[in-house]
Structure formats: C-alpha cells, structure tokens
Figure 1: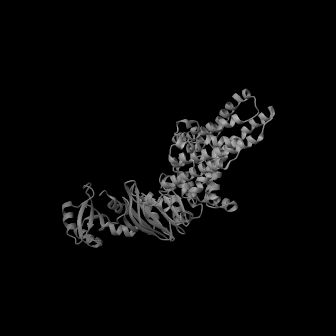
Figure 2: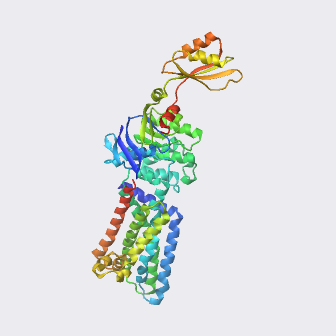
Figure 3: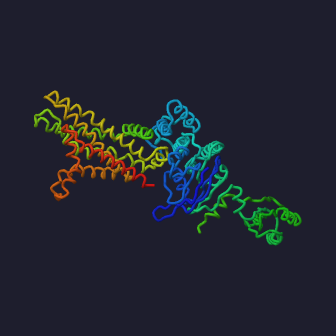
Length: 312
Length: 234
C-alpha cells in the first residue's frame, strides 16, 4: 500500500505538484494520466526516491520515503521515461550488473537473468551493445531492469511510448500479467491504454489531482448525460427535430452530418443519466421514418480527460 | 557496501571498454616518459626523482580526464536516474566510482616501473625513494581523482568537468610556487594547502603523518562534497 500525503514539489519558483493526496492499494494497476508537464514523472520520481519532495511525504508499506530510502528502493522496480541505459554495455552485462545491485549472486543471478530474458523477449539481443538496440528493445531491457529484483511494486513511466503497435500490445499484456500479483503504477497519455489495462486511474493536471477512480466510474461521473446516435433515412429534418425535441428527457439535438442521400445523422443528448431510448424509438416508429442506426454512446475516458484537463 | 563494490566493478570495466582509457594511458606514458628520459642522462644519476617531480603537473591534466565522464555522462544521458533508484546509497556510488578511477590510475602507473628497472640496470638505484614515490603518487592520484569526481558531479558537460577539475588540481599543484604572492601572516596556511610539497616529502621516502593527513583529508572532503552535490540535485 502506497500513501501519498500532501505532496508538493517546487522547481525553483515553479510548483510542479500541489498538495497531492492519493493511495495506491496492494495488487492494483494504477494509471497516472495527464497532459505533458502535469506532474506524472515528478510524482514517480519522488516515489522512487530519485527526487525529494518539497513538502508532504509518501509512505510505502508504512515506511516513509524520506527515512527509509534503501528499504523502499528494494521494494520498487522503476523504468524511467525512455529508459536511459548505459549504451556501451552489453545487454547481458547490464542485466548482470543490475542483478548484482539487487543483491543476486551466482546461481540465482543466472536463473533470474534467463527468466527475464525470456519474459521480455531479449533472446536475440542479449549479446549486443545497448546503443545498437532499437527503441523497442531498449524499452524491454529497461523493463527487465525494473523487474530484476522481483519487486512488490513496479513503477513504469510511459512504458509504451515509441513502441510499434505489436510491441505496445505485448507490453500491455505483460503489465496485466504482472499486475495480477504485484502493484503496478504507470503513466501514459494514451487513454485507451489506461482504459484497457488499469483498475484505477488518477488524472493529474498542472500538479493537481482532478479525478481519481475506476475508469467506468469516472466515465459515468464526469461524462454528464448520455448521448444517443440516430441515423434516419428519407425523413424531413425539420419534422424530425420538432418530433424528437419534444420527447421527455431530451436536452438538445445535434446534427452530425448534413442531409446527404436522404440520410440524417443526429446526436440526441439527454438531460440526466436516464435512458431515453424507448421514448425516442416510439416516436420514430409512430412517424414511420426508416431507422438505420440507433445506439447509445457511452462517454469514453477520452472525453472525461479532455473535459478535466482543458486549459483553464 | 556491496553496492559500492558493484559500482566499482562496473566502472573499472567501463574504463577499458571506452577508447578514452587507452588514449589517456598513452598520453600519460608519452608525457611522463619524455619528461623523464629527456633529462635522465644529463643528471647522470640512477634515481627517479625527476620522474616523480614532474608527476603532480602531469596528474593535474591526466587525472581529471580519467574522472570527467564518471558523473557528467550519467547526468547527461539520464542513467543517473536508473542508478540512484537502485538500492544503493549516494556515498556508495561515490566511493565505488572513486576507487575504480584510483585503481585505473594505479594500472596506468604500472608500466612506469620499467623506468625504475632501467635505472637499476644503469646504476645503483635506491629503492626506498622509489617505493615512497609510488606510494605518494597513489595518494596524489586519490586527491586529484576526488577533485575530478567533484567537478564531474557539478555538470552534465564532460568538457566543463575536465576543465574545472584540471583548474582545481592545477591550483593545488602550483600553490607552492606562488607563495611569494602571499602575505606573511597566512603564509604557513597556504603553504600547507599546496600538494607538491606534501607529495615530494613522501616521494623522498619520508612518510610523515602531516602529509598523509593532508592527502586523506583532501580525498575525504572531495568525496563528501561530491555526495553533497548529488544530494542537492534532488
């Protein structure tokens, strides 16, 4: 369990974090979301004891990061953004070095390296110098670095940035796999990624937490009313607007497309989070319009994110 | 402490993986060899005093070149973030890197033992001052390596680290020759600060605790300042 309490960080006169408070439960996959410069990396750097907070603290399993940095470093595996590894070392030498740092020796060291080489798919590059590797492979070496000590907590800063789509899926699966047993904290600005992998997200904007909760709950809470997309054929737009506008619970109508080939695409916004579909359908059926498409759009994390982090 | 050992091993290997090490060793052997043998036959004495008297000024240029990348490179590429989030303290990192550069300099000095054997072939060499000379060289190398590490921790730029380290080491080296600028009241203090006299005392084969204390305190202060700088960077 990680408790972040009243965390502040100043860089000179610039306040990067403002009174951050949140907890990360054991075994949870937590996504840290936010636009660039929101404070995600700073939060992770403080958690991993790389930076010191200006005020406030983080407790990991009741150990304060300020008092027990070594204990906490032992519990956490960290992959910084873009994995700044030693370029002139061979992959195997690097992993052996990290293993030694993690206190692994002899047989267990060889075993652990072999396991990670397999898990992260490094077999083909294990005897290459790190600077010769592609970005995807570097990222995987970084991931192996983070997992070397079999840590209880994994902190990954934008683990999928710069990877190709196949690699992204692989890394996501890996994160989910690890997340079954361990606590994983990772930052991203790809929202579908957070939706696909996280149990919970914390959205940060300008150093302040603007939302904290399970992805579905956030979507419901901040998404406002539901939207129903309707596509009609051979209907008169004025008539349709008048008829649908009268339905109870409808807030407003929005035409998504100009009438073309007799098609009319509409977005119907409801006032509350109530289901207006039965009422809408009754009106359409009575009017006798040809209904081509009719579905409720659930508010995605994307919209929530945009709404919460928009300028001002 | 095992962290320091791991850092030490990694850095020592790192020296020999990069071309800089070989360039530095070659330059050192060329400079010291030329300075030594160009006057060796003129003195017509089988001793290494001339070699050791040149050493402080050569070290002032060579040692910062050895240490310049140790922190600058890590700060520049960002690998320092990886290193300092591994379970290792700042002081272990500093000590590991310091010992690696000290051993590297010792290995760089190793071939110059050939000078001693050459001199012993040509005449009756007194081995006492030679041993003292090498012992003093290690202390001097330690002090300069500490200062070089400190300079390296201050900047992301290796060239700045080199020039800064060189300037500091050079200052310590020439303090003794600048004493006539110094007012008499603080003369003894400034005279104690210069490294050359202390080094020459030891290299004559006289190991005085004052000289030992001088080098050990410079090493300690430099390493302490380095870990302080690293801490302040957070």
